[in-house]
Image (cartoon, rainbow, N blue to C red; front, top):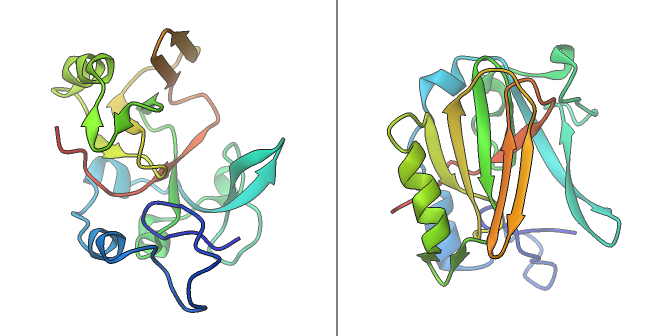
Length: 179
């Protein structure tokens, strides 16, 4: 399946060489500010490709040469310089950086009040805050010590907390959250 390089939606019906679903996504895809050095100086980068899993879509980490990568094998990670120009890149958590993943919190460009509270709580210490590949979520990369992750699902809130030692990679869009 071919997907928009900015928002990730299916673009199978678009012309064969299309990379984006719309002019808006093309413009946004080419207007990304640099990611913070706290992340780019670390050799913790992978690329990713979508794959079908359990009736939905997921993301598979790969190396720049297309071979599989692993979020737990540093031998398969790359320097940012090797993946920085790619649209589907991911950061393997670690090096003191964890992630708070807020799912389904942006609707029609409006951030849900519960997500605004979480963002406000972490904005001062955040390394990077961005819109997720779906366009409906937020990634908050924060300095964090080792520990166990948490999943919070209560009412509207859909929060996943991944510490640096969680063995996870997070897809990085490079699209800063405007809040």
